Amino acid sequence: MSKKRMSIKFGGASGQGINTTGLLLAKALNKEGYKIFAHREYPSLITGGTASYQLDISNTQINSSSRYSDILLCFTAESLDKYFDNIKENGILVYDFKNYSFSQEQETVLQRKNITKIYIDSKSIATDAGGTEIMSNVVMLGFLWKILTLEPDILTGVVLDFLKNKNIDLEAEKNAVLAGYNSPSYRPELSKKFDLPQTDMFSQKSLIMTGNHGISLGAVAGGVRAYYGYPMTPATSIFKFLGDTAEETKIFVKQAENEITAVQMAMGSMYMGTRALVGTSGGGFDLMIETLSCTGISETPLVIFLSQRTGAGTGLPTWTGAGDLNTAVKGGHGDFPRCVLLQVMLSQDIL
Image (cartoon, rainbow, N blue to C red):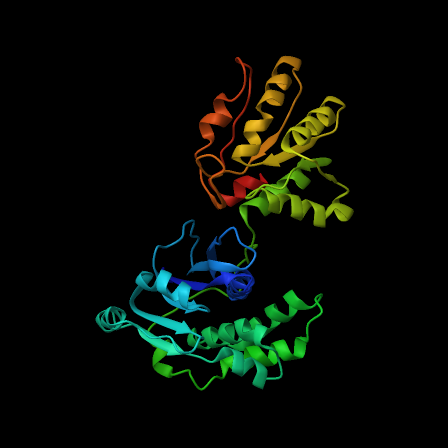
């Protein structure tokens, strides 16, 4: 079985369902036996801006994201402008907004790199299938699935399973996926541009999760009984995961009024014998350092998860980085024993 790899990127705006669209594709491809590495980028906005979700796909384990994409699917003109230069030679560009005028420079690049551009009216397709315009995302998923020459059963199953507990017309969602899959915009030559890597459908499937989900599962497996925090990305998803599963895991989850209170609650719990965890990011960790020193002089155990964002200062809230290692190693007053663990693979989060 030869090793191959390809990359697919969705581009759009915050609030447009880009993350959900990418996650659905990841789950479906995982069920097909592919190995997935996903990278999400989004602005610190509820709606608007430019967001993306990129999936790298292979038949062997991959641990990094590509800079360029074989297929780019755009839901906004801004995302097309931003990611246009990252399309590989012989790639495909799919977009679903009308009246976009390609510049002469873009047309030259399309021709030089043999990139095929396709407009698909996904909103009209969704409404014609009995759904609403918001279902245009799954229309695009269905169209992409056809380009990949995969049968639609697994994709529709993943979409319906993901949405089954939401107040959504599941039949309309299924019809929207199939309408995209059977769109007349599809041409057989599109599929000839790519040769998906061969997979073993009976191989062991991987779990689709983020690093923070891994940390959360590791906390559950490690016997953590209390989690404290103050919402600060990129650590917030640990808070949400443990909060959503608290009834099942019996972990006490508490949102404090600030980072200082959160870390002191964790220290107090550990002093009383309860295995506790506190999560934060760079600026929050700075506020916790005095309590960290207190645990040193009082010889009280304390576990802090430092989910690093890009600095300096408040930095970029929705980006991740590794610039706070010196603070983790040296932060505090005087010298006292500490152990700093840096994960480089998702499996290490759980272990």
